[in-house]
Length: 107
Image (cartoon, rainbow, N blue to C red):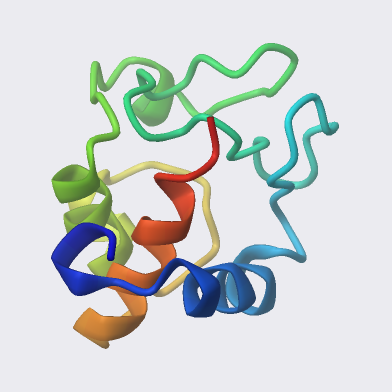
């Protein structure tokens, strides 16, 4: 069990469905419309090489912990005004927990 009882297998499927069109998840995979998310948990925001981040993201100083990701994924525009991710957020706590549990395995 991952973050808040999240299920990493369900999270892998959800991540692909909800974020796979913009993000990649495999180590060494190219950035897409969004940055590669491999190793995101524990990483400082705006630091994936070769990705052109918004000023809001690159200057935020945020470290992506499970708890911070939970808040961000609830409402990205509210959490980080000025970021360029075109995603309204995940309202269901269980969906966020499952996705974060999956992201925690990507190391």
